[in-house]
Length: 164
Picture (cartoon, rainbow, N blue to C red):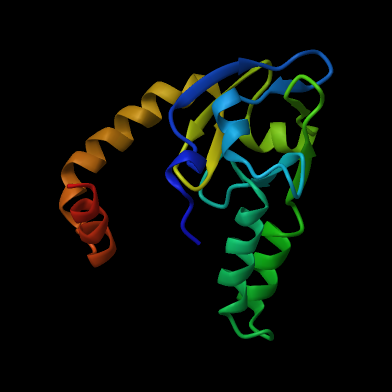
């Protein structure tokens, strides 16, 4: 499911976690979430590292579609379902655009009193602020080395032609 350009999570933002474990979600990220169905977002401990994968309810749909590709009796599917769906949390916005970040999620990401929101297009991640610059530098270096893997798809070519 392709998100529209105005519904993409872009940029990075650092915010403080208060004593009640509340953190303000960047306004740009709140605008990218479909709050008609749920006034909040979904948060899952990442399987790829010490951070949280987050997004609208469409993130759960994406995970579910990937899981359904596996045989229902495959032990990998069961483990992935437990690790993803069993640990996923719906976090509701309060009136000020904050959510309470549950302790197990904070512990997985290693966040204590500050966190960094990192946009990744269709999803965003919550990282420990102490690791942000190093992770950005590694990603930039690898992206420069691997930039050739980006290919212009027919869809991208058509969008470019329509704008010209």
